[in-house]
Image 1 (spheres, rainbow, N blue to C red):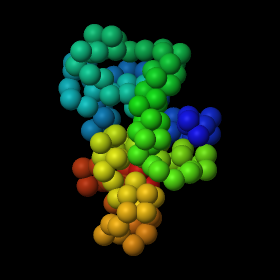
Image 2: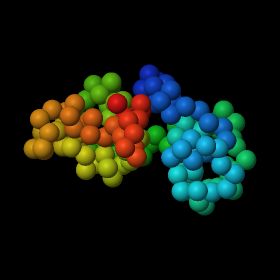
Image 3: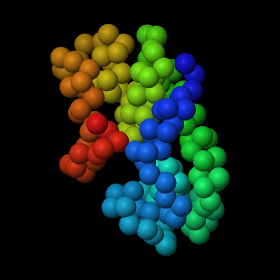
Image 4: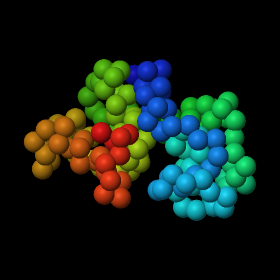
Length: 144
């Protein structure tokens, strides 16, 4: 596997929900000026240097293009962090997790360590995965 499958892309898009106007990822509210956590499209974090590009919103076509370009670093992180072979659905699940928790968190996660047969404080992959299901102490649908 080298890329998130179409099914995986559709699942991630469904989790992230399309937003054509910038919003604050922490509270979901639309924004008109830059804040840390500014997001657009399917979960694209807007860098402060990108704000002028996205402050007035984007089209569906732009959101799809941005989504596809955003996937590459997460796909590469999974490929470079996991040393065992994966079925497509397993690869998809890991890319979605990486997308949601970030590349550095994924690389250092107990999920990656368990898959790579390293010892952790978790007995099962499920326990390690569930440890990442919250943001600001709230269970997030995209992380379960």
